[in-house]
Image 1 (cartoon, rainbow, N blue to C red):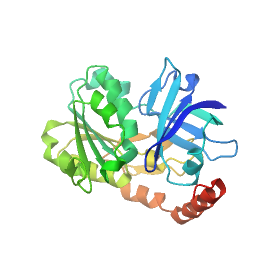
Image 2: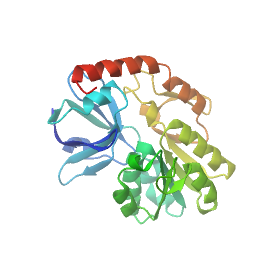
Image 3: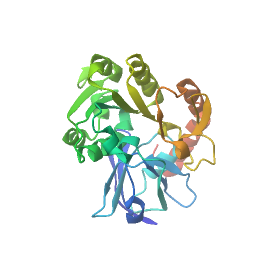
Image 4: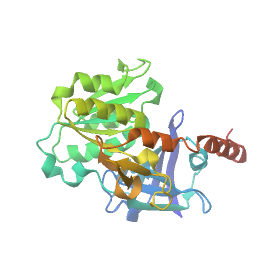
Length: 279
């Protein structure tokens, strides 16, 4: 069991969880993830590491309640059954910062994808990088960690679908308007967003890294749910990634795979809400 320090709602369907987990964060690097199990019989939930405090031994993750497993996770208050990690490969830039010192880098975050963007930008700022971030959400109320993101970024460009904060439109609009400023892009968010970002950067020959963490389910490579096609070859997001060359991903196939059990997942979620009394 691991002690839960905090598990609080930070917007209508997003939570911040802090866990005391010194061994897990000891050697963690930005881009890696952990697997959480709320209870002994719970499903495994892979979540990218949002932040670490190695002095206080605190691991922080941000997650959206989007199904039965995360619904259950949102009810955990004191102890969590299991925390496994760090898993997956670290972000390539954070792993080899000296190789990227002269690059002009922009991060593009969509929705809760800003949670894995933040630790990478923070890590790179501490090593002398000036990073711009384009951060998009459907509406103002769904934006999170703005103060923390602004503290580590050179510029943050906000975009909302409805125009309630920042520029109205999509992250690709801002990226297209500023394409000549960058030669490397890292995009993390919904698959459709990453697909559209990659289409823009390919047009301007901007190297692009995307995170395929939305596909992960089991987190160990055993379930096969995170299988994706990279340059025509099968890869697993949890063990081969989660990051890949954004111009080599078959996004249409990945999005099709994500929707296979959509109806079954919806039914399970409704059942879980009834059991927990959260409906």
